[in-house]
Length: 213
Image (cartoon, rainbow, N blue to C red):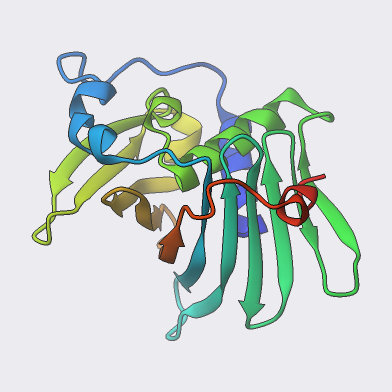
């Protein structure tokens, strides 16, 4: 979940002037995703590793990054990138900031500056956590069952601003979202895989909680 990703969503949201009506009123987002909704766990704490592969239009080789993440459902998510270089990104409903190995920080999104930032942060958190209730107003959601028994949700943007950035966002998983695929209108593709997922211990340690302060 990079700064470029956050900026792309921010640009799309700011380009939108009004909400978009449901494209298919006979199939509501909730009805289209009942199966995934029923299977998704909602742990208070989720830890794991991630692998991100971004294929840029016109480039032969993808950009790869790896690291670990910590999701506290009531606080936000922390991305600790270890490859190709170390950095940390902290995302809460109020802000998105990056921390470099030298201890310097940079606030990328701040809800205190503009209410629109809070919408961006909420959307980013909803994608990571698989929060379908939060995603439904922004996307038309269609569900498929994969051959391995997992579910797949295809999120087509309802909003004209989001449509200028994304063709489709796909979420795949079982009890947790374990893969997010982004197809951008410009031809770039990003795949984010979540590995070694664990909801134990079920509460954050003081040191983990302090990283959100």
